[in-house]
Length: 189
Image (cartoon, helix red, strand yellow):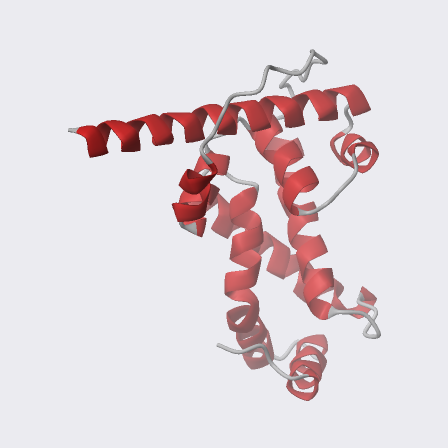
């Protein structure tokens, strides 16, 4: 479904501000895929992502009056979804200990493996990371946050953010390396 033009989007937003259920439904359907793709990066399962996404849309519908309409709605929606995922993380993983450690050694990964992988396969690998690694990786690599911003968002030290990103990358390299080895063994049989 192509993105709505600004006039149609504005009409939907106006309807949502008036608590019009049909406008809310259409806005939800229009941005479902985009919102779900964001939430999947921060969760371990599709069900968890859907729960976070629905919570995010509830926040959007209840706080739409705080949206600055001179800015991009899509960017605001993205920010709401990321914050909702972070809130979910804080609620679920309060007691997990994040330590500062030195970065792990590099592991060689054949770049052709990554190029041949579908988006869904890459996201599924990210979902296999521990919650702390998954969050820091998604915030830093995909969403472009600095370690200082991540540390503030997750209430951890900058060093823990850097360490978790390093560990997440290492874990992903190991997973990709295993895929590379499995593919090589399959071809040589």
